[in-house]
Length: 169
Image (cartoon, rainbow, N blue to C red):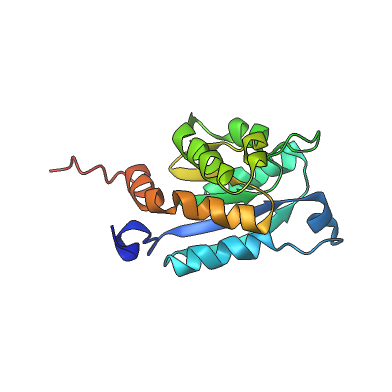
């Protein structure tokens, strides 16, 4: 499958949500959100915005609901580990009606090729309305590699969520 066929996000709108107390407070620069933006743009997608929220479940869930109403794809980075304040998966589960566990499994499987710590990631992927939400690790490299691992699947997934099932007619 060629890059253009497998990785084409042309016409697809995405929002990127960085979950980080330090980035929200301005004591650390968000590098992961911009890294994800570059990948989406390389794949032909449109990034409607990058937003930073603290590691607060209610604020993450509210930001996810808002983003899911505006975009076909929401990428989160951060808050997926085992630390007490890592609550991105719980907020995502609160917002999603259905899960896409194969995507999260693929992210962890691919991450394990880079580091054994990938197995500690708790990110989930799911559907809120017609929007796909994908939790990615917080490190810039982990976020980018994880997005690239699932990127070939995203055009088809987004088509299905948009009602293009190939069964019309």
